[in-house]
Amino acid sequence: MRRILPAGQDALLVETGDLRHALGLYHALNAAMEDAVSANVSAGESVSLAPARQFAAITELVPAAQTVLVRFDPRKTRPASLAEAIMTLPDTPDEAQEHRTVTVPVIYDGEDLEAVAQLLGIGADEVVARHTGTAWTAAFGGFAPGFTYLVDGDPIFDVPRRATPRLSVPSGAVGLAGRFSGVYPRESSGGWQLIGHTAMPMWDAHADPPAAIMPGDRVMFHAERDQTVMTDIARQRRTLSDRDIRANTGNSGSGLGPMTCDHGLRVIRPGLLALFEDQGRRASAMGVAGSGACDMPAYRLANMLVGNPPGAPAIELTAGDAAFTAIGSVVVAVAGAPVDLCITGNATSGADPGHTTIRQSLHRQEAIILHDGETLTIGVPRAGLRDYLAIRGGFIAPMTLGSASLDTMSGIGPAPLAAGDTLIAGTPDPSRSVGRPCEWNGHLPTGTMHHAGPEAIGSANHPVWLDVMLGPHDDWFTPAAIGTLFDTAWQITAQSNRTGLRLNGPQPLERENTRELPSEGMVPGSLEVPGSGQPVLFLRDQPVTGGYPVIAVLTLDALALAAQLPPGASVRFRKAGEGAMAASGGQDVSHPDEHDGKESR
Image 1: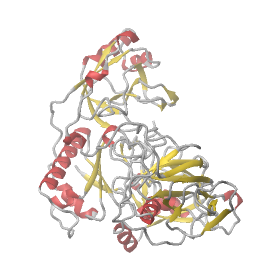
Image 2 (image 1 turned 90 degrees about the vertical axis):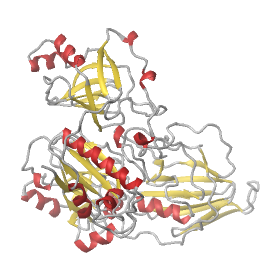
Image 3 (image 1 turned 120 degrees about the horizontal axis):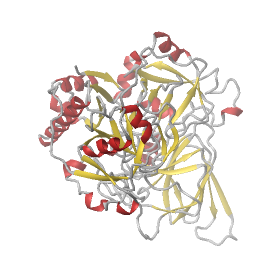
Image 4 (image 1 turned 135 degrees about the horizontal axis):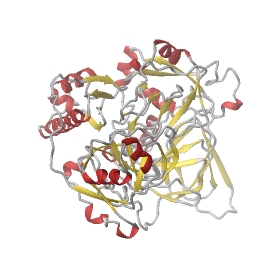
């Protein structure tokens, strides 16, 4: 029986009961989206109950073991209207379709091969024979770029995860977990039972598609004796049709080649972490997170101030302390966490160092002109954590899957900026004017909480309030746990980054339903509760699917605020009110493809 659960302001989680019905719904939704587009249905007009209008508002689908996560543009439809439209689709399982076959050469020398054989009551040779003797089906991506969950192998394979996950699983390891098989695309921690390894890369950013195995593929494992017989995978790659890659368009190269810089910036000091970020990417089918700017409204404001179109790459600065020198005359802006800005240079642009040095301080978020040779120094934020530096014309940066964003967990995207880097500005649109200056946000916690007094914003006495919507799995927790969620001042630990904020409270959240959750899609802003009972608040750089229940999801405004919270800050959660929810849902505060999840493996 199909059940639809809320997953924040711009997503629904549809439970289908099993994988076949999840894939059936996934294909039905894809077809409905294509029909809506081909019929030129505009979901930007007045909201209607007509199903086609609702399907046109869908921005991305994330199929998983028993669910489909449906992400949508909240400016174009209401959750209830979209849910009603989804319920009109046939509830039928996925039908077998003809797909390409991918052969994966494997050396069966895994550390857990003998243990798996004992668990199944067969010999190691028979484990290999059964693993290679049946075609597996690539069901859905998740966990990491290039990781695909494989199903429909020999029925004997139903293997529990390891009781204690390994801290390091090598790239290419072939494993089993439950009824799934899969190949680790890179070194990571993991709890799957390892039965072998392959030298076949699962992810290549220069290939099209980058993932060696795509959902729908038939996968055959072939036993090899040694490394010398590994398959040439280049012959197995295909060029996707427009239908296959409509949500994954863009360049996949990792470099731009030699370019002359007439206008741009030179990095003098990058600070703690300086990254290219934009509105993110849509490549969940390959297990790739959306990534993008952590504080999306601040990123958009920086671009608006310099007259850039939406989506222009900007620089995300964590904890400030950065400096950039102008190459040619450029227009720049800094937005986000309140920070001291200073321009230094010579009285005559381009003059020799002997001329008088000038110094100008800036006190608000606004577009400014940097003349050739002048240096913009960005201090440590007085409050908050992240700032966005935009340049008129946008920064030219390498694109991967349609985005210049760096996903810090997977490593996809341009490397963090380093001193001496030259940043090239694109060509500005002369029809776009600069934006109106605005004041800094005065309601953020200090960036150095360990020096803050008891009355400071973000202290235990004055926590930052974050609005949430309960679900999709709040019913997995006891009533007492729900009370604890809202009554506790949770502290952000030092083990926090762009992937998420680890929270700590005196009382863990107790689960009423203790069964294992099948992998399912998640969105940034999700409050996932692992076995420890201490919640994790996900931000941008997390895997597509998650394996622990999500008790609540932040509103889009609260998600942007969470991106500005430093370690040591205290937060409280509260239910978003009906009126506040409607008002926030109608604002352009979130990119429609910004949500992804994390799975603990």
